[in-house]
Image 1: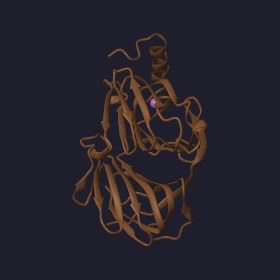
Image 2: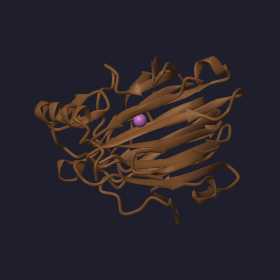
Image 3: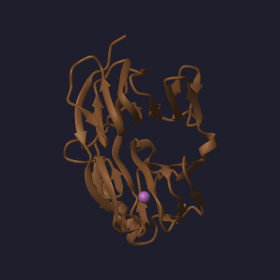
Length: 280
Ligand code: CO
């Protein structure tokens, strides 16, 4: 079993998106542009309503999956397939945009703390023009692993004999939300085919067996390939562990559209402008 070491530590950058929601972006930045198959990772959240009230009014996507995971707060989601739902603490929306979806994500809370994540996963050329599909995973549908040292919410992937609700996915994703107590460790088995990372929300972690700089709060830790990941908590920590099998295709980015070529991006813009984008 090869032990996984850190490849790069990337401090999340302050950014804003939608109608001015403040967020911290880590993947999809100059330091970590594309961690195949992951295109973007945002931590959004604030205790100040002015940072989030404007929300994400209607906007399109093509060629990607967006995975939204709420930890605190309430959002309402609506999209061009007719889906509509409220997201509360612990809920996940896993959206395969395929050829086109137009959606909005607006806070239904007027104050209090908002906290969540949005991850973009690339889709292979063979799936980019599929019909959109939208999965809503309620907080209580996530599977859980718990012992004296740790608590894991499993969204996708397997830990020991517990498996998350997202199955049969082409990138064989692992998506764990982990709480690890002070001076405790966790060992995670990872397929050697996968790219993986840890996103530390809060705490202080030691990863792998080599010395590394201090890792605390809102930091992306990109990992080398390997099969055994060991994480030790210098103090009580909360973090995500995410992994997926690379797609290995060229990408062309055009804001909310991610395709294989520039011509396909221009086509997406044209389809959006002439109203054929979200016709299924
Ligand atoms: Co969106």
